[in-house]
Image (cartoon, rainbow, N blue to C red; front, side, top):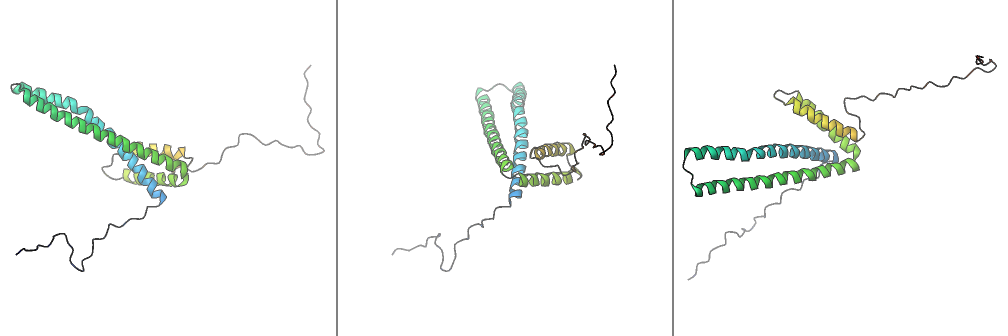
Length: 196
């Protein structure tokens, strides 16, 4: 007699399928622009930091390997293994670096599209980021120099949109030309003196 076993993946009666994850509504345009600018800036900073670390990996590997070689006899197999391990780390680091730069370029392009298509929302998003960074700058432990540099770049970007920075108040233009004065009717005009 055969014993029938139930399939473990079958659902019991009355049991419902798990619900799919909820689809969140898209954020408003200003928030979306703000998030894109933040992503662009963070990716640029991370790519720069990663490349600086990567530039130091080869000298660090050679320094460590030279120290190891001075203590032990050179083994060709061990040298090959160490070199292959370093090469695979270097190849992985190159892939990560390329991915960071590609993502950064994609967000740069996205932000530029927002700036050309939605100038008002872009200016509002930049203003929001600047205000948040200004508040962060005053907190203890904040890197004030880095925050000031970033605020400066964002202010320049905001000015390129034609928006006034939040701290600047618009000044009326100074008129350097004086309006022409009219002579009263019936009053004689002064004559020019001629020198002979």
